[in-house]
Image (cartoon, rainbow, N blue to C red; front, top):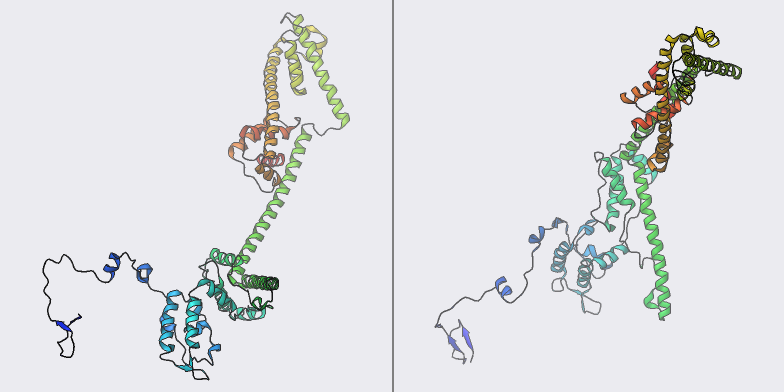
Length: 512
């Protein structure tokens, strides 16, 4: 028996009508409906686009389904055209936008509304099928990329003549010329977001990042099948099909290489004429020239100072007797030897007079050798004259015992010089170790290669040490400037060792 709610009884039917229902017992809860029932049944609720992060920013008013598409003119429309995307708008459309466009197109060209007939009078659904194909292809990223790669594309890049003509009207023309070109090619970008070309106010670091991106640009554009000479599906055998595929792949690689060369040419031309890059290069060139001129001037001044310092040092050596001829040096050597012999005779007379127990009276043998080795002719003459001079060396009665004090004074000075000699020997060893250590390190090699390239600034402590060394190693001393340089480098331990020329120039400046 059938129960029908809400219908009146009829005589012509055997249907019994229930006009009221009496429910006994307690109803615990009403059955859920909608999303609640879906949850009860274990289903999953679809998350809306609003919940995911807001609606698409694509302007829906740009979706304009073309009117008048027919099976006869359908070949004139691309998949983007049939869904209402004109120009470059299709590249910006995402899946949600394509769905909206698809619904609009279906409402307009559904077979129930747009009825087309074939020549034999049958229903023609080619337009509707084209719309379905557009939806299926454009919603699939691999299929969409393959399709986009086959579409006609403006591969042109601005010529030098056009760019130069545009820039003659102002730097702003650069962005009008190259902006659309980069935007056009950005549709094939594998890595997104694609940086913007910017304008004249864009920071130069950001400008260089833009070009760095395009130099390393990765394109997903696929040339498989573009201009293919062979059709593998028409092959008569498996071997022939494989051969056709390889030949088509070879052609695709060739086209891909040509595409990358075109993009490299575009980037090179844009960077060449970019007014921001041109201005930055001009600034760098000017700075480089300024630094070069400053270095040249500094080198010129340094060379002049080095020449003057050498003249000054040579004059000091000449004044100290360091510029004597061979005959003059031999004469001086004999004079010094004579002074030493006179000193020894006078000291022997001191022993004969009862001063001391050794051969040399007031001095030991070692002390006499120390004095003879360290004292110059002036010191030797001072001691001899104090004890009576050459006459007293021939006549013991003329010996002046008061001069013994001068001898002891010179002995103390000689002992001090002897200690300095030992110290100088150790300093020379340490300086050699320092030099070898610097050469062994990369920083040392770099410093050695650029030695003298820049004027070094001496600290007050270093200048004071140089001044002290000028007294410690007077003009005429053996290896004077080597010893002074070693002393400063070892005792003060600068980050990079000073050269002998640098020490000489510093000493010369101190003397001015």
